[in-house]
Image: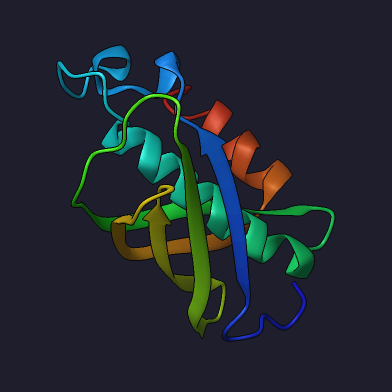
Length: 131
């Protein structure tokens, strides 16, 4: 792992399509951008912010996500998510995350990720429960 810079940011975006609606993902009955879809986009932004600092054998895993989703977004709009590194504690990285659509901010929060050796982490997970 290279030294991670406080203040590093990344932005990602997505178009709100049928598969990202609350009714499609099971988080509600309306045709609005789903909170789980917003959360995933925020995590994607955090991963993008970390990417330049990871060695080839490293990846990051989400360990906590505390967010508010404060206003709906209809199908067809674009949603943007931003992540900013606000704290580094060894291999634990804390981000401020926000999401906005074409009109206004729709959500925000704090997200933590932990940097791991990808192969070791996957191997350990694959053998979980096997005796």
